[in-house]
Amino acid sequence: MKITGKTSVYGIFGFPVKHSLSPLMQTAAFQHCGIDAVYVPFEVSPEALKDGIKGIKALNVKGINVTVPHKEKVCELVDYLSEDAEFLGATNTVKNENGVLTGYNTDAEGFLRSLLEEGTNVEGKKVVMFGAGGAARAVGYALLKGGAKVLHLINRNFQRAKEVGELLSKRGNVLVYPLKENTAESLVEDADIVVNTTSVGMKEGDPKLFDYSVIKGETVVVDIIYNPPLTPLLKAAKEKGCKVVNGLGMLVHQGAIAFEIWTGKKAPVDVMRKVLEEALYG
Image (cartoon, rainbow, N blue to C red; front, side, top):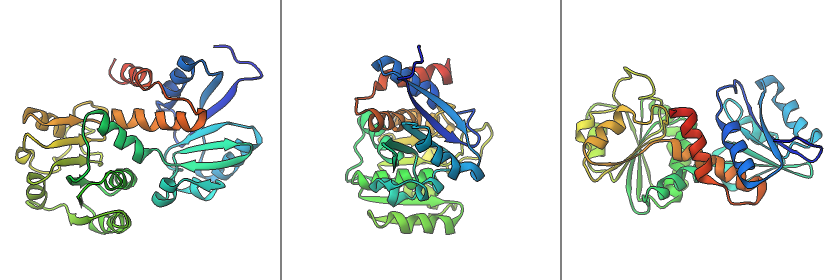
């Protein structure tokens, strides 16, 4: 690629940021669409975040993605917030229009698109979700926005679960439970969709979330972990004949929506997915 005086600059703010796959994905999208732009990682410490956001305006950086630990703090530093970003209190995408910064959250819509792509519509469905972190907020919000009939939220830390449940209940029917023996199993048996938003299953030897043998074959099982591509939860569900969805689609689509916000062009989703699959799975 040629960098000239006309080349636009985009990037990602994180701390750390070296592990991010966004530069690969967004660069592939820009090149495929013939857009004269570069996308670079910026390692920005929490102490330097305020200056970093000012720097977007000063250097005319056209847009950034935002990853941990900055998603919440950035909300206070931009000029405007989208409806999703405001509700969730978290921003993962910023667009710079003539020095005016708008914060967006593409995680929720990215999750919904990843399910629809797999032929799964959440409208009217009974959903069981494990976890109460930042990802759970976005995923739970997406499920309720998509019309889920009820969201059963289960988490080890019950106080945290209640806080997230209180927020999400503004958008729909949410019931909250501590992670206890038999509770999860009885809910999963009756669920249309089961979603894991925790890190359980990322490392070999992680304890099971619940007894996976209770999963029924007609249940859709989703795990937002994308590496490994098949967690123990998804393996068990697949053996039961379930439709299984890992987190790669969410990763691709949240990036694709960011690309569309910045450029106004349709994102080359297949190109973005292919480059991620090659980086992650070889």
